[in-house]
Length: 137
Image (cartoon, rainbow, N blue to C red):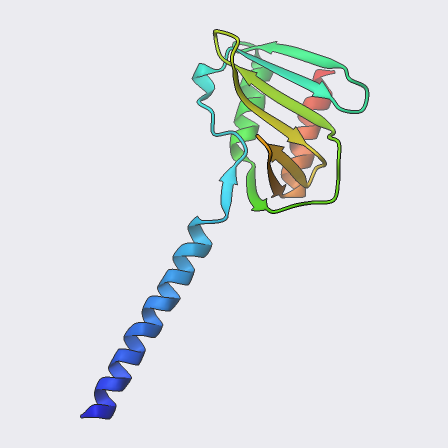
């Protein structure tokens, strides 16, 4: 009887541990780049980190809508640090009063920083956003 109870409890504990690991992997490490409500965005500024040029887009512009949609699709994983400095593009979103809503710095097609938090992104997502931005210049 004792061996049977031990086996049952071991199986229950192992099942709970496995379920916890699965839930953590599926929910914890991923974010999206843009968690701002696109309807509240009035302007978007895109600045090129290599030459300082910037583009200011109004919320109703087709490019702005496309950019915000692409940003929503980018999945990112939080990292503690990365060695690169500077950035390729900075996207800054403002509300109707001109207040800053969010700032995203794309360090490269694989790294970004959102409000001083560092993230890795899928290079294909990074290349997609870079191609879209480069069309605007």
